[in-house]
Image (cartoon, rainbow, N blue to C red; front, side, top):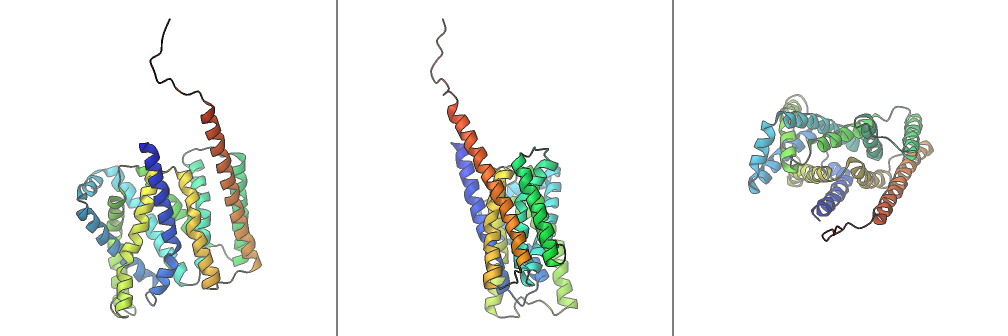
Length: 316
């Protein structure tokens, strides 16, 4: 029962995380005229503040101290900080510069990256159907490269940075709580955030925080909450669900982002891009169908097994 409850919590956390991520482009566009770098810097600083408040409120600050004292986990948290920092910067650039659809593509590709990591790093064996899905996704990238006239680097950077982020989070295990893990990741990135804000304030047009009115300041002030909540939910899900299961929830966010980019922001979608996206979706359908088939086989096999004896065994 405890395992079932744990998995149910993982499912709920994954749905919440990816649903909120799907709405992020709307929030970031509301923050204009703030630029991508300034928004990321505030995200880092305010996420740290928000997480420290949570640790103090829940009286779990000792969990952060224990994490800092563990050299292995401390090193892994530095790796996740670098990966999420790259992801944040590239995603903000795409969201504010008319590449929301390409950013969505990155998160459509992300489940395939998770599968590739399982094969390359964990030595997992793919079934023939899974190899077909991987082949279709590679073809999709080729078609989209031709359609964009360049390699869709935003999509690929987002897919691989977050794919590796999820993988490392999974390797850190259940000993690292969601709040403590994100607190340390934010702390690793604070020097970068401070440097970015100083550069913007001194060498560019200055910071927009407090200069664009009360509404803008309040919205930007929520950057820590908006950043931390879905990441905390994701970290909770990553600790409770296998990497392959977690990959299937990643469809929610890019679907919302894609719809927003195409139908609200009216980003161009020439035929070759529709073909490329259709190939990606076909690969995901193949993966989903295979996963459902394998799960049904496992359930049938389990139900066919004889029930264990519950009483004492009588011997002759």
